[in-house]
Image 1: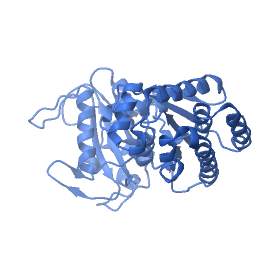
Image 2: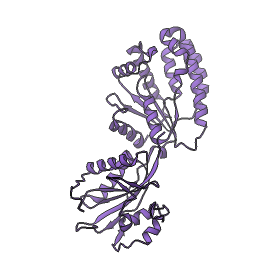
Image 3: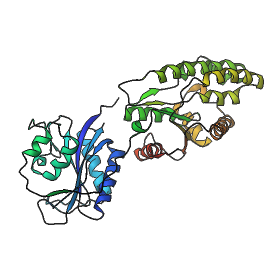
Image 4: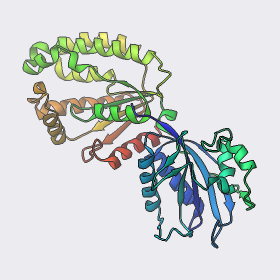
Length: 376
């Protein structure tokens, strides 16, 4: 699990569509830095240290798993993406966006590229006023005073004016969902995605225990013989696991993410079992299904068959290497039928055939944004 720490950032803009610049920066911070918990009001101030157009300023509280150096690198990239051009002379100048790290937990940092707490924050009312709004009792790690007391002691006489317009705080995954189920065909990447979400958002992971099933290797050697005991054992194990894990709320986790949903059992059983076996299986399944909590969002990762086969070969499980394309296509057809017919589930289908979300951060952020912004 990644260590998550609190940081406070100051944002300012005095070029172009200033309010829009601040909103874009906040959205990017929510995407690339961490969950934004608080956003201050927006304040208008005169430029500080040079003659230019008025600034719009605000402060945000963010929880992040980035270390201070990576946080600074990410912020500089966000500034660059939003049109910030830095000069080499370190002189104050107009800018489309300016993002400063004010505080980082209770750490004191002195490095060539970063000093925290920000060395000039106590001199600037345009920083202290919005920061006091969202963190009045936070103690400055050097001054040993609350931010409110620091504001009261500030000698900056500049005029700062709160404007009527407000900024929107991005809603994080753990605020929107209590339970996310990730599904997909064999080799679609559902377990990898569930683990990444669990790590990044401090979620409780519920991962399928397929490796412990003694029938699985036997099934791929003789599907006709072992299909029924395999599907029944999977159903019992999935039911027990989901019943236990979904019922146990973890105070130290933000939400639950699983790499399967119990309806998976029915989809695979439809492909694997004979008609009479499936009829018996369905009776048992229907009893269990009524007792299982439904996810707030059901995410189906679609990958084309060619990509699935490459993934299966790459991960190298011996018992999977002889899986035929036709079998994968039958599984996908089963999922498609289920998704179309199960109207009670809040279902999001994401085509990941051309994505590498494990190794490409942009691809991963794309998926997270799809989940976060899904309206259902």
